[in-house]
Length: 115
Image 1 (cartoon, rainbow, N blue to C red):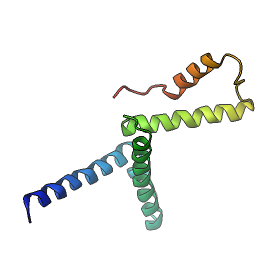
Image 2 (image 1 turned 180 degrees about the vertical axis):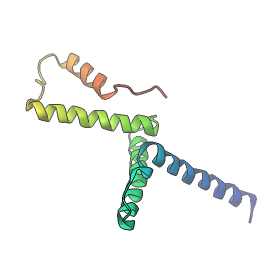
Image 3 (image 1 turned 90 degrees about the vertical axis):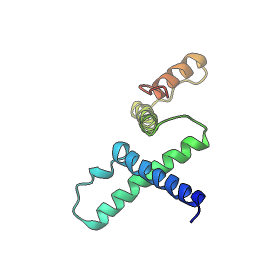
């Protein structure tokens, strides 16, 4: 085995370890309390899939976000959508356009840490 092959394998190993670490810290790999093997497999695979999907989305939109910030961004977007659906009114798009965009962006990026 050449030195380049060994370095490539070692680099891949670290990527897998980072995937598991982020899955544990941010996406709830260890939060499944079921004793059913199929449910545990599903929860485990779902957590790792969410980590990969978040990384792909961040890469697609060329954002520099950590997994924690990505999770927080998704949470904020879901909360904004829930507020709008709960109140049954969409904001008036024509009135105070610049100010509403500012508030929307502020809510969307709420508590995100600079990276």
